[in-house]
Length: 74
Image (tube, rainbow, N blue to C red; front, side, top):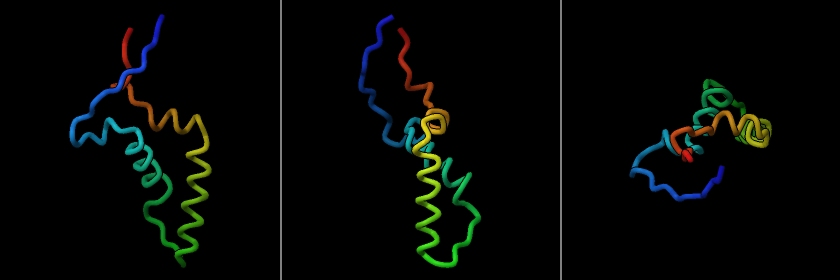
């Protein structure tokens, strides 16, 4: 089986096909929504903590950013 890298052009507005949009949605819905922070520093600390926990974990990235529509078939 041979795999080939191919660039795909996305429609002008297609957030469902853009993996980073899925990541932002995951972070907002699971970590950043409905929270109140006492200071801006607390907000930045929370953002950094979640970023490190979620975005540096390959399993989370693979699950959240999986885009089966972007896979090519051999």
